[in-house]
Each structure stands twice: as C-alpha cells, then as structure tokens.
Image (cartoon, rainbow, N blue to C red; front, side, top):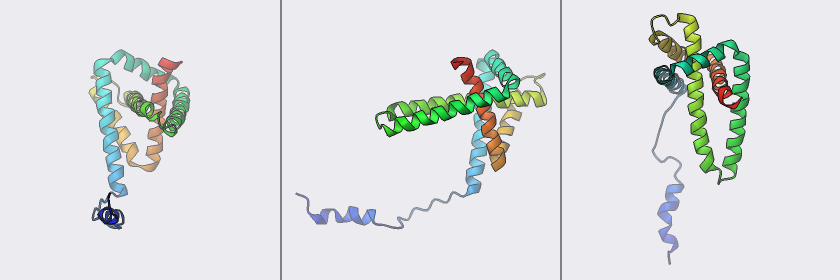
Length: 173
C-alpha cells in the first residue's frame, strides 16, 4: 500500500507556479515564422506540381483565373464543412482516429490549391515565357509577404480558399 508521503513529490511538482521554463515567442517571431513557412510551402509544393503534373497544374490555374468567385465560394464552404466534420469527429473521441488523417489530407489539398492559386496570379504578373522559375519565386514571395501583414493574411486565406475550391471542384463537382 502506498502512503500519503509517496505522493508529496508529485503534488509539489504539480503545485509549482514557475517551473523555470521560459519560452518567449513574441508576435514578431510568429509573423516571420508564418511568412517563411508560407513562402517555403508555396515554393516546394509549386515546384513539385509543375515538375510532376504540369498539365493538371495549368488546367487548375485556368479554373482559378476563369472563375475566381466560384472557386473561392466552393473553397470557403468546403473548408467550413471540413471544420465542422472534424469538430464532430473529435467530440466523439473515437472519431479522432479519422479526424487526424482528415486534417492532414485537408492541409495537403489546401497547400496544393494555394500554390496553384498563387502560381496563377504570378503567371499573370510575370508570364512564363522563360520557364516556371520566375512564376514560382513570385508566387512564393507573394504568399510570404501577404502572410507577413495582418490584412495581407486575410487576403492570403482568400487566395488559398480559391485554390482549395478549384482543386476540390475537379474531384467533387
């Protein structure tokens, strides 16, 4: 049988108000980290898309440019549905096993869609006469710079939603 004295070290650890760990993450670190992450994600995912499936990438870019409002609407509605489904799955506890892969899949599709949407914008801005490198760098820079600002972050989400919707429309509509 375990006596009360055996629990005292655990109780004293739980009762500490300052355990001596100090992690200082300010708003600047979060913004800069988010911008760098957005830049790298767009650059890497975009490079993979244009190298592996250039035809699909061009067709989906055309969809985003031809119907940006429809793609955005489809993307936002789909994002809301995915969010509600994930919350319901997490609440049921057992559904967590389904929610985690769904979250990863949604993030992957979002990354692909956002990269395609930014590539479409970059192609309109700088063209693609001398290859994909310039549009890739411009797309990544646009996403990174928009995430760096608060208002630009909202615009970045809207552009990502348009790409997300364009990708999902091809498979669900």
